Amino acid sequence: MYTRSKLFFYMRGLFILMGILISACGVTNHSESPITTPVSSPQKAPNPPAQSIGQIVMSGTLENADNFEIYKINADGTGLINLTNNPARDMLPAWSPDKRKIAFTSNRDVKAQIYLMNSDGSGVIQLTNDDWDKGIPRYSPYLSWSPDGKWITFTAIVNDKPDIFIVRPDGSDLTNLTNNPANDLLFYWSPDGKRILFHSDRDGTPQIYVMNADGSAVSRLSNNPGVDVPAGWSPDSKQILFDSNHDGN
Image 1 (tube, rainbow, N blue to C red):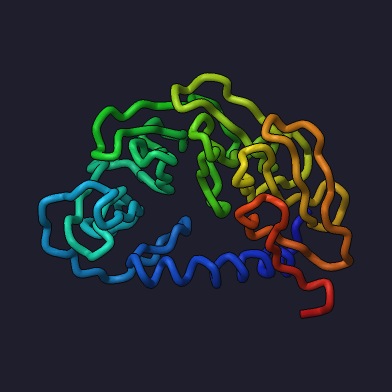
Image 2 (image 1 turned 180 degrees about the horizontal axis):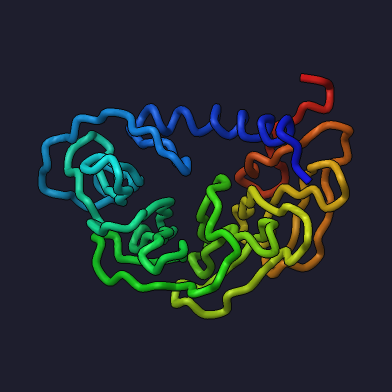
């Protein structure tokens, strides 16, 4: 069971990492009671290919303070486009590796589910239709694609505990990878696509674990008296970056 201090510890680290992105993109806070940061909408302009200058996909309340939408914008601040334009809460967008698709969550089917659309907002399809306990929680990194683009990873609440799931981009092969009564969250694909790093308190203290991409061969990587929080992989998949307070700070 996570204590308030443990939750504060790893969320503090996540806020520090994400603060750079939020300040750069003008994204509003993903909280249950969102606080909207005033943003001046850039002048809309022709939308060049993502490969030319780079694009950012984000969720926010830029046009309606009560309605989260998913937007795409060029990296130079031009070409702002509302991709979803739906009265539901459309959130947590994630590019596919080839930048052709965007996965996201939405409660347009009452309870939050995983959806997929083309990078221009067309062709929206619903990938999941499960009766999660409390929908899709907002644990970083929210949604994530496998490096080869064959899987979408997310966290959902089952029996009041978060588990890590994968699903194909066509909605098939939905699988609970962790399926454990503990809190399993904060997942990171290795760059080679073979393993998934994650955070769990299944052995008492929240520590760092790794498993194969199919959920097998779960192994505990850290064993400290404090809380260890994974933060990512080295490009060669041989090392990991993590945050820890095992020395008291």
